[in-house]
Image 1 (cartoon, helix red, strand yellow):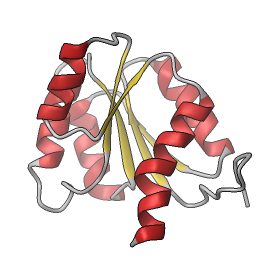
Image 2 (cartoon, rainbow, N blue to C red):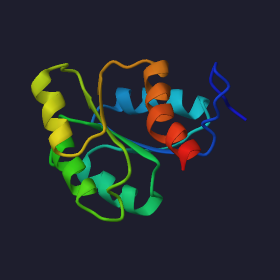
Image 3 (cartoon, rainbow, N blue to C red):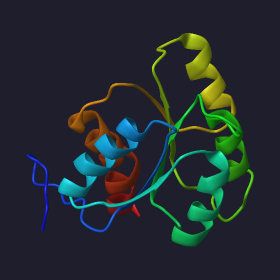
Image 4 (cartoon, rainbow, N blue to C red):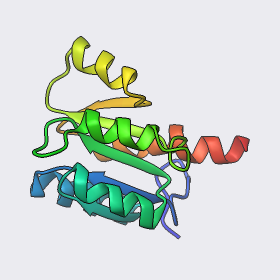
Amino acid sequence: MATDSAGISFEGIKVIVIDDSKTIRRTAETLLKKAGCEVITATDGFESLSKVAEHHPDIIFVDIMMPRLDGYQTCTLIKNNHVFKKIPVVMLSSKDGLFERARGRIVGAEHYMTKPFTREELLNTIKAYVVDIKKKG
């Protein structure tokens, strides 16, 4: 069973990573799989919607700047669907601006992370929004 340094198990947690950057998708996928997560990737918001419906993830990481359907629009569609609205959505961006953070909150995102991210940032976010919530529930 894969655990982090604090002995927390991420085994079986379903994560969707939505980013048009192959490098970001691969990096996140590698880091999260090593921790025991099941990782599904999508290249844009349109592709992600069918994957969210099919896999019912525990958490979603979505890039803000993507072609066709950006991260804000993707988050809005997920949060407006009664089946998926409770899934935590984490916005990813290379910008660390107040406007981006505020807009993410407005569309329903639970958290905001700046790229490049570390393994610890990814796992701490999953711990806060998935592992700790499951323990309480």
